[in-house]
Length: 431
Ligand SMILES: *Cc1c(COP(=O)(O)O)cnc(C)c1O
Image 1 (cartoon, rainbow, N blue to C red):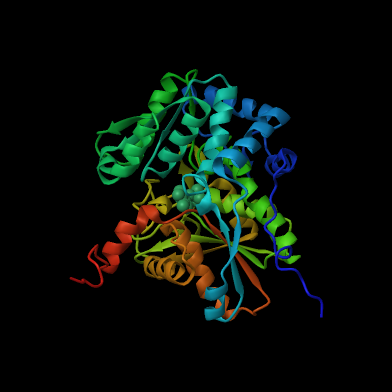
Image 2: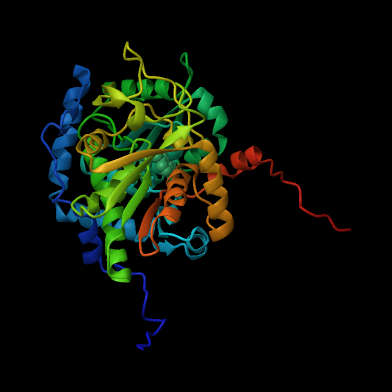
């Protein structure tokens, strides 16, 4: 029997040199098309006053991704500020309980600010700076994108302006305060509806009037070209890291990579490095919500039809007139009636399987990961965990499921506690 030294076996690889970190973020191998089409999906369907500014962004990005200095700076900030590489965590207790495939987490929840969004926000901030812009602008719904962008803006020394529906401002008080603490200007949109859609329109109007001042920093692999490509490239580090970590640690690839899909950025990041590994199943998990009735879910891949949304051609949940459906998910980061165009293409090609998990399964997964492993996941990420819990028991013990834990659940604890009837009172009182 060979005795392995537990202190040297089973190590997390650490790219400590900048050269290694650069290697992980430089993506010249990923396709970038002139027009941003993924099959029949994608493109830039814009009002004339925005076509020029978007072309300028596409040209600047095409140049930046060839520039080693740009990538060295990005790699350095991911390492020194975001805290990359994020570790892998094998779920020993939970996998034993399930009695089937082993589950391993990729810990994007351990990034600074607690989710994967900081990866592309830092990249977008660097791009804005390179283009000579003085400010970032974006809309935010629940505030996650706004906080990540405000953080990146403070880091690189840019102004930041976040448009938010008045309804969301009232609901997301801590995130509004956080953005303001970070020096960001928060704009409350009081127009009819007072929600995310009105915030998008408002931010776009300001951007269209001052494109020389702002970079419009989109929060997922959605919107007009070049953003689905830019955000994909900046998130690709997640899958590249996990692939290297798994191979170094286990000497093999995972049998499946599982990630939740809202707009699709964390899933795109998790999947991209494995696209050519035909033995690795790629599984995107959508929000099944309360039921399959219209307005009760956000299953764009499952139930959407080809349409046009936010400057891109993609799958959309919409009615016959092309009006987007209302959507629901227990996770506010997933309630979007569209999806990144490259995901729509993956579905068409059959490379990625898209499934759904409903709110109840997601709440179960949230609790089970918390209690069995000491990790409180974001409700978004709990969709991916829920699907792993569903399929692991049916798969052989030799199989390995890699779940992308896109974010931490601190933001969700009050909501979940209320749902579960967990009060802030103590379990026991002593006198
Ligand atoms: C925003 C968010 C998501 C959804 O966005 P994608 O672009 O689909 O990744 C998922 N998880 C967390 C933690 C988020 O904050």
